Image (tube, rainbow, N blue to C red):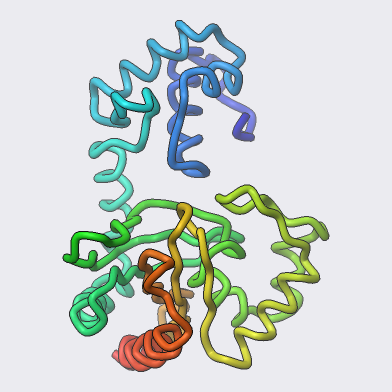
Length: 254
């Protein structure tokens, strides 16, 4: 279950459970009734009623095929309202669209939140086979291209504080890496100036990430160019990395 601080003196159990379900969407993109029931320690029927109520108000949406639940428009709009005041998002947006038009692939703006990478804006590709915008999604930074680019910029002591254990949290594809392996990967990122990741939000997706120079607002952000893995050839990795680096420099100078 998602860890929370000590609650109020007079908690309302149904409200608490509904909020805990919403917090689950912070860490994983899909919720299932059986998993929610287990997380909350309630019957499946209770979990289903909670999800149905959240769906009614737009906080989650149900996929009829898989019978799973994802973040709904109401939840995403609240999150976007919270981040809309970020200056970096406003500065970067026109550059995201320009880079998207140049490369024909989805370009995202990603922020570092602790040891996670938060996708806060995107210019989605228009071609039929593309990676959708991941705005609002939060993933382990070490499992994403933009996240690794951001981690590579951190001082050693800050990186050690983020990852006190040798075994890191599992990536979306279920794999796990060690802190030693991460440090080796970040050394390669520092040398090349960019990071590459596959299966970072779903299977068969590849991405190239480049960090944006830290400006006066001290916000750590990066660009991620994502596409079906079949299109991420070694030649395109180099091409996309150069284009992303040039764009990141222009965003940082604004």
